[in-house]
Every structure is written in C-alpha cells, then in structure tokens.
Amino acid sequence: MPMVTVSISPLQAADIRAAVDNGSYASSSEVVREALRLWDAARKVGGHDSEMLTQDCIPGGGKCVAEMFADHEAEHRRTA
Image 1: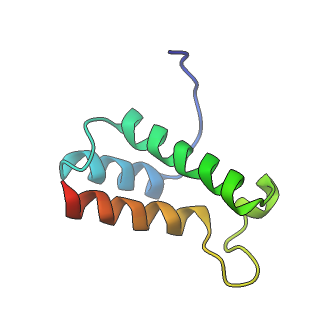
Image 2: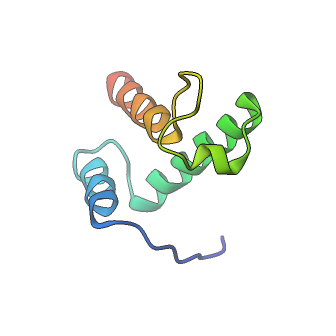
C-alpha cells in the first residue's frame, strides 16, 4: 500500500489517537482509511463536488463529512 504524508490539526490527531486508544480502531491508518471511504461515498451518493465537502456544512441542511464520520464512528462503537 502506498504511503502518503498529510498534515492534520493537533485536535484531529488527538481524535484519531482516542479512537485507537478506546479500541474503536486497530490503528490510526484504519481511522483514516475509514474516513476516506466515507468521504468517497458521500461524494458519490450526494453528488456534491469536493469543494462543498470541505465546507463546514453542506448547504440545504445536509451533513458535512465530519458529521457523517462522527455518526459512523458512533455506530461502529455501538455494534462492536
């Protein structure tokens, strides 16, 4: 698998570490891969372009990717 370096905020890094530490995910890479899968699905299903997905919220009351990821992570914890 190719290795890519990205910059994230300290808060994002702490959230990823917390997800691993609490057992929701086996590794930080797993968290990021899941986030990218959700982002890709949101792009395909919602028909939104990437610029809209990076805004705080999608116009019209839709959820932003961060909100969808948080919902998914909560569901992941409930079913684990």
